[in-house]
Image (cartoon, rainbow, N blue to C red; front, top):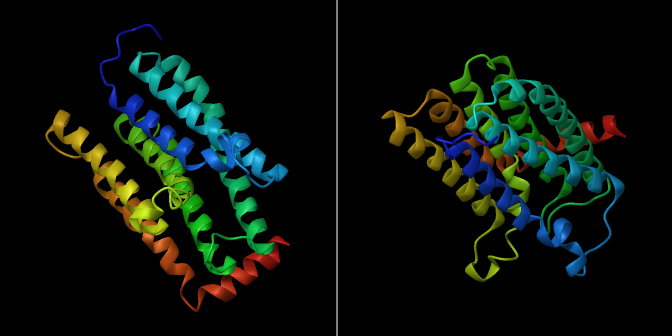
Amino acid sequence: MNAIIRNRFPVVVVIALGAVVFLGFARTYYLRYLFDASPLTVMAHVHGVLATLWIALHYTQARLIAAHRADIHKRLGIFAACVGFVLAAQALDLGITNVAAGRAPPGRDPLQFLSVPIGTMSMFLVFLVAALALRRKREWHKRLMFLATLALLVPAAGRFDSMLAPLGMPRRKIAVILTVAFVAWAWWDDWRKRGRVHPAYLYCGSLLAVSVPLRAWVGMQAWWTPIAQWIVGVHS
């Protein structure tokens, strides 16, 4: 990967995403040994490893394409896709397990909160499957893969509330602001280089941004509680 990298956006943006994830989970995962953090379950450790591996693979894949090594990118893509599906399944399992144990962010009812991890993984899977289906259409594929990774930003963004508490900014707004900021950055990059925004960013990016507050809204509806109870019951 020593070739000259001309399109730096896919590489730079995944570094930025990785930085947000690292900062969001610094206290509870990456730098937890520096803080008085509660012990993690084995499932939580596995999730942390899988999520970190996904970010690392996304960065590696972006570097490979930028360095014109599509041959290696395609071979590694099979492994990356497998990691993505395992991550989604494990994250859903962990989310439902936490709800069954009564664990949720402060001030949130566990059953209501279940709509957030389910919504997050649903968006991740939608974009991942679409990206794999359109893998031969490079312009669609790379943008959908970016949106799949961006969909995972919500859990990290939700953990910024303690750092931004003095500003009085609720965690839900932080997640929305960060997601919209990354989508807007992608739009700007397209507009700067192409003179227009690619449909994948325009429509799918808008869908992702709208879905962030929608995930929490769904959990607050009366009809969601029996659905969440059924999901937890089936899982148990």
